Length: 140
Image (tube, rainbow, N blue to C red; front, side):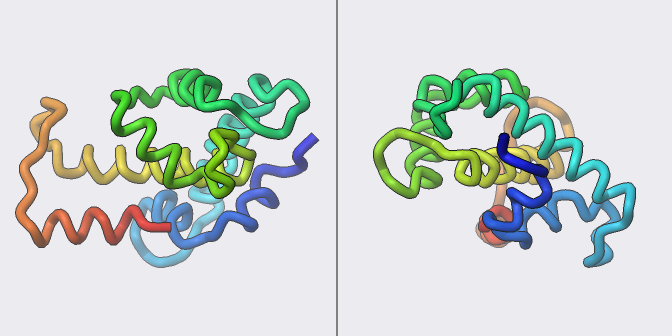
């Protein structure tokens, strides 16, 4: 229905998803990195398609359910802030391109968080420079 996940993502932007899947940080995407990105996008698109029921969008409740299915668990303030940031129409209806962007952002945030959470306790302490580094790496 929506075509290739890779094609859909080009309407979203490339900077963040390239950084997210450039595992060796060499500024290019190898075939293996491309395959990992495509697998992620297929999973995101599949979850979206399962929940959108032919409407072309997800309600906020469905977005929450979709994120859980994708392995993301956000508390209420974080969830609503992220949704507000990616809902272009501000109507509480998230379309596929917005959902892809949202998922890429959350996955990138998770990756960055995990790189600072070396003790795997679910908490990090950042100085200002580290905070700036994190926010700069999570922007789309």
